[in-house]
Image (cartoon, rainbow, N blue to C red; front, side, top):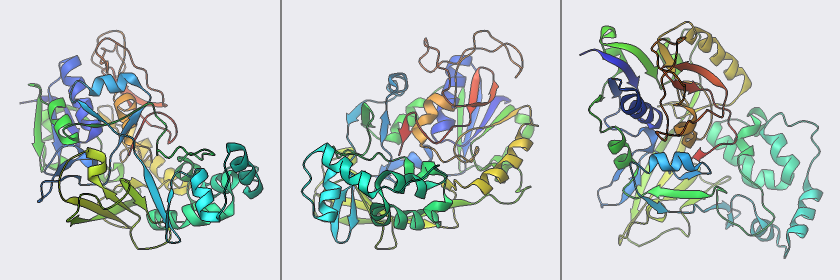
Length: 408
């Protein structure tokens, strides 16, 4: 069989693109992944004790875009969940993102109003004429002491780099609060797929025009068996590292099951200055599962291994642009997603920005009239990020790291 599209990668971007192309445009899609499962890094499964775990770290759905929520609700029901986290600093657990309690516990204060906390931040801040990197962003907001306690060590472990060598967006993603609100995200919609992410993606790609092939490398596919290619893997890998290998950070996960109902007070605890791991996650807080035992995961950042995160540093972005120039020469290949566009952004932006969605007229070629592939079926969605490519009514978008809806 000849397919209209080969989609490489059955993660969030690949599954959504496959569903839109098949259901809205009537395209025949071959969806492959070199892993033995769908869902990408959002893959979840039951461990040996019967506890639902996220195999590649915690994934929390949160968005302000109701159209994205309505779209995904076609494939899942939801469990409301508000994510909370603590940071282990000097032997104490404090709220993260920073709030009034964080300041009071770390410095022994008794601040009771937003104004008092804001006055403390003003005294601590260091002047920065520009915000050139992550260190600039943090010290200009909360000062050097909180930067050293909560940000610097974590960034060194996670990225292997000083915050001053990272883009402003890395440490600038977290809010700073003067009140007592201790939820991790501010978005209006926060929830978890009731039966898990894997079940949601399985329903999403359950379509007669979508053929799934797992444990399959894209190099194994006959180039004559498809008309167009969507690639969601590392772009340097696609081009055989023509311009050198792009650096990525990887992760190793260590799972522990404990004979108690809960081990942690909240789902996630970060460890910025102690222990070789960056954080621990207790999944039952997230999933709401009732079970007499509990499983946690410890995350260990790695310099080598399976790529998880592009490193947001200027020199690497310049190297990526060499690959982007190569990509623009390919009329029937498009690159979508975090690894393919070498962008460090939160993955929940993909349902709105990586697929999308919308042209007014029907056509086939990349420069001809476009057919409509709408996220909601009857509602046009225009990408909010800068458009990199478009074809057959589906836009592949290079996303900025800030704003939008977020994943993880």
